[in-house]
Length: 288
Image 1 (cartoon, rainbow, N blue to C red):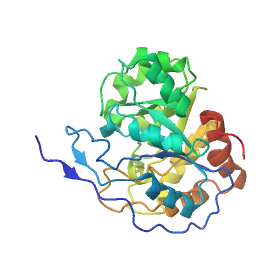
Image 2 (cartoon, rainbow, N blue to C red; image 1 turned 45 degrees about the vertical axis):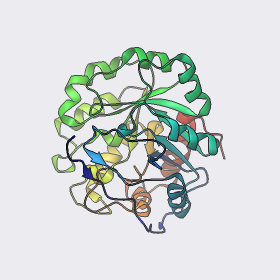
Image 3 (cartoon, rainbow, N blue to C red; image 1 turned 90 degrees about the vertical axis):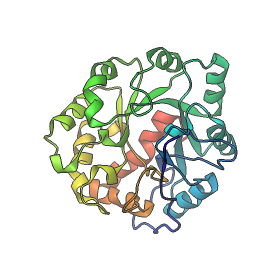
Image 4 (cartoon, helix red, strand yellow; image 1 turned 180 degrees about the vertical axis):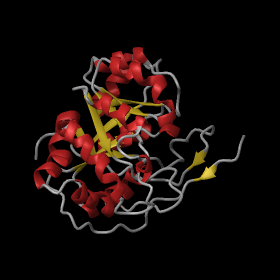
């Protein structure tokens, strides 16, 4: 057993944002883990975490005025979906899920996830360098998308396969460009060449990961968010990435993360599209 680095706990206080989110707004990227007495995290993962409980997140989303959310199965939870299923069943109108089903999961297990509200399968290079094509094809039959998180140094390896996937694709965290490299970097150009495809969506999340400024309002992310939105306004999503796993300095405040939308998109109609209309289409929420 190697030593695991302790990731900081979620924020204990959250700012009230300046921006008042419209009714039906959706945080499209959150993680819930714990109580860990119920579901153990992967001992082989390099980080260990404090509990990030459903009631803690609901308090945060209420504070910033978010009505709906998408719970993404975190990589260290592996294929154990007990916490995800518990959350989705507790609030079926409020939450949707993105799962990480095992390639060996039975059809009934996939059906259980679908009936609970899962609408996507997550693929992460840090979890496995293999893209499970057969599993993706299986869930695509149920209308699911594939959500991809991949580091810049690994994009070339997956690039052609990403373009050939038989379903909607969601790119995490803007594709993880480095703001210091600018929007003309080779990596960001490659991300944009993926976003050109009509089945590709982008989560405008992880602004703290993209920015080189270290803290809100992350002004150097503006050209990246606007360029992606310019190319795919009907396929952009927003989210907090609560509880910010693996963030060791300058923990983002969720109120600041909502307010960054004012900087990115001055027009109210653009913010409404990103927060309400687009999530309703992708995740199947009922219009409020």
